Image (tube, rainbow, N blue to C red; front, top):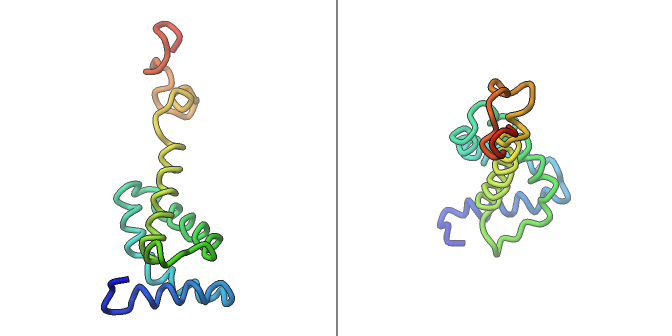
Amino acid sequence: MGDPTGYDDDLAATLARSCHEPEEFADVVRALSPPVHAYLTRRASRDADDLLAEVWLRAYAARRTFDPVRGTVRVWSFGIARHVMLAHWRRVVDLPCVRRSPSYPSSSASCCCSSPGTG
């Protein structure tokens, strides 16, 4: 796919082999964890380790769906990381239901989405 070093092709072959030899997936994880972790750290530093684990769980479960015609293993992995990050942000975003929870520091503050006098 335009990579003169063959690195992307090697990762694609390794990922394909992991469908029959699951231990091969560890090579993909070793190769791509540093850049994926950096991506997650820039966006959610406290949760990056947990999010990275989720990325690799999802990638492992979906490894048979990888299509090299659609992109490299790196692009595929970052796509999974993006979806994991979006799911994370949906869980932690400052929504009314979160603001009203007892664990939220300012739960006594009125909700920005509620009508006046209902927050």
